[in-house]
Image: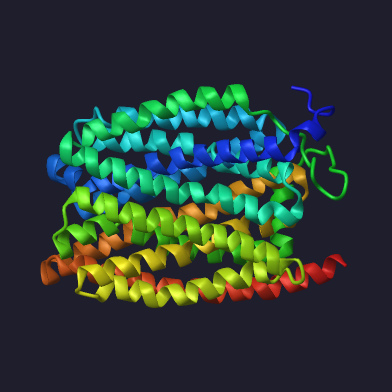
Length: 427
């Protein structure tokens, strides 16, 4: 598709906002399909006779390992080819595999279906990030990427609401099928109505048409230092996010005696609306403060995580159900601030032709550490403590998230110092 003569029309405010909405909806489907398993996992555990470790593998490590294995080669193709097509195909694949998840008979079959979801979702975000950076100029990117990132929380909201309701009324198998089919339909709508933008269309400097190897991109990202520390900080923070979100339903069932339908509504609203608000505030605030000092793109997430630690401790250790849930909502809002600004900083470090691959590498680290090990480590600790603590084992297993959050804060402040050095070296 020729894009050289369409830059002006593609970057008109009305159309680029439409594209942003469409990409955000794709991301909503991404997290509806990904988090549906979480709200259904207690029912699945009972029917398929699974352990907490197996649940951690299903919702975390196994999904993540295939996601991160394929995210880089898919992003390489996206940087060279049509990113709109990549996103549409990825959405169709993961939606199909979600529907298939409702037909499984045992752990192995469900594991294979979730691997398929991970393979599909590997092609979602990196091409979308690159498209957004081509539609929106630098001073609006953090906001735009944060709007896109709200798809995580609206996806959690819808997944929890629909999953909890359908699980209670029709069973977990119907929930998977009901969620998967609409994604297939939307992938066709996305393909038909969204246009591929010209690379670097909104950059201040003229973009280079040069193609870059994986080695070149890795060397550039490593040489900046900011990216290395930012990726590690984001990975540890994602460890806490997924460790909390993926185990919150089981936590409320076991330790607060709640029903899955009630949990779906409450957690959906808390994580969905709270997370979306936090993401949007993070984008707006960092774009505003970052005009004078780019360090705020990383300082704002760091301060938000510091405050979130206190709410995380309250969510885990308060015995009162209402207080625990309120703390969960506040924690979700504060934890969500980091993603849009982090992507914006990463994209500011590289030329337009490297952005999809840069996002892929960032998400590789975030998902491998966060999604891969967050739910799994919590599940492993819970299983080890269960003979001694019973249902309280999950509470104490989740307390590790407090320590990891503190580590994430330190790495964010290290990345701030590295950003100062990298910015000065470019002057």
